[in-house]
Length: 254
Image (cartoon, rainbow, N blue to C red; front, side, top):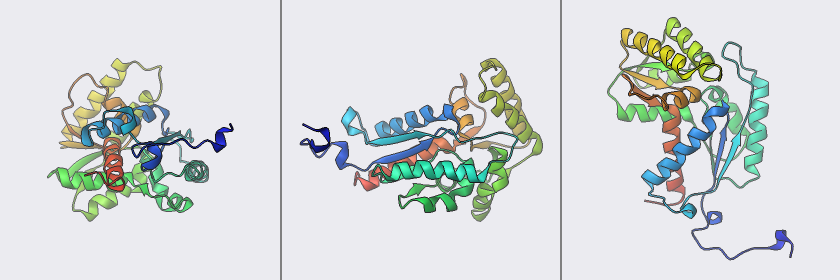
């Protein structure tokens, strides 16, 4: 019997009968696993999924698109890489897509045209969540220079009467920390020391809350062995939660 001709009898709970999710991660590579873990965690805590076959089909792509902290992102290569991944997901009968990378969302209006599949927007989801969950009108933004220069968060915050703490000294410290996070030759102790220095300056500048808009930073902060002094809104965590909420709507789960 050829496998192509084999169609088994499946029950209504089989993944083939449920909405299917596409994830384009890998930007950077260390953030892929933690994002998927968050998605699974929210399926368990929000929808009370417990058995293995409760969970949906998730097609995960780890996309190693070029990135440098100091250099300008190559738009053409980035869009080419995203189109390659989106084409792959389009062939997998995916119902919606999430891309846990803030930086590439500067090209969102362009790459969303590569597919008819809905793509959750991490910027919109994050800003909407913050508006609904804080009265703090001034939040420090920690993100790559490319994300900040795109002004995506600044524009959305301004529309909603919020402001962001942006400072060249803070950005310099963040860039240095991000370089350490992405390289294994730096010890955890050195990274934590760098973070504590950055946290101290953020507090000095009047920050009570931060927006972690970098998936590599989210990965690092989640591993800290102590509680942070600042309230942290994590764009990767927010997107993971919205993946589950969006799925529940498609699957008609109350």
